[in-house]
Image (cartoon, rainbow, N blue to C red; front, top):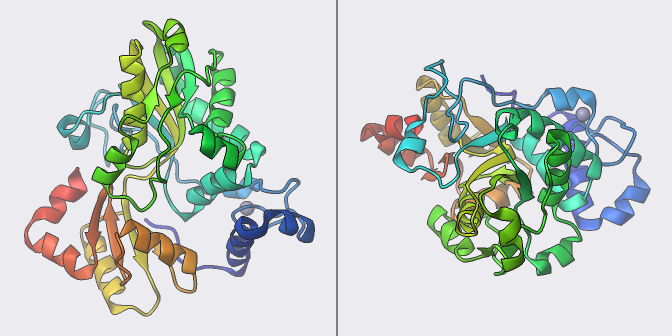
Length: 340
Ligand SMILES: [Zn+2]
């Protein structure tokens, strides 16, 4: 089921390139010929992906939950809802996402967010407009998740607004980038627990009095790059509904809710954890952090400081290591978690 974990030389070069680009983008742009963001093969413009790599995206396809776009293993009817959507209904009506989160789709998002590759925004938006096809019909306004002015100044552009403009153009709907204001500077959501994420964005968004007129009684399509715990999308949705929106749908490029395991090579605990997941028939994404300090840092941040391998995540839940996974299974709770 899963992608081969083998890291070939060109992929390694590409990740080195991406890492270095974060540190010294301008110097690097001059030093290296443009390479595909994912595989390193030469491409026409810096930061773009080659056609082959676009094809490697793991797309989210039907059948899936109508509310949260969580893929189902088999078709249980067009209006089927996931257990998650029933247990904890989001304030928005429907979420649509293009791809499942893995190291590869993650790189595309990072490429846009930190290296302002506008050609990526166009390609991402094209796929998002297709994914939001059924949402686009009823949408009256398209709006991005806003950045706080301070963050906007640092980063110079809002990647969500860049994508939203293109999604709106393709759906032939008005793009209203200033519909929602971010009135509170928030910490980065990365590395925060689910409850912390919700608190972090609480009261962070507001519909300005001027925007209320545009919004009154309208159906909004909200655009963001990534959906993780949904804390941000939910907070913006609530602000829009308070501001007078009739309803809100959400479209993102990557949906992170799935099983992820961070591993290192020659680790018995990692192998044992993977064997258990395989025995359960679970498709998982493996991040091999051997020789990749940035992946290890990402893991530690997400695992609230735990630095041992493996670390396992199921949707929003940090399971822990191999023993935690077995404990969960022993208590009969693993199946529940996997089904949610
Ligand atoms: Zn490529």
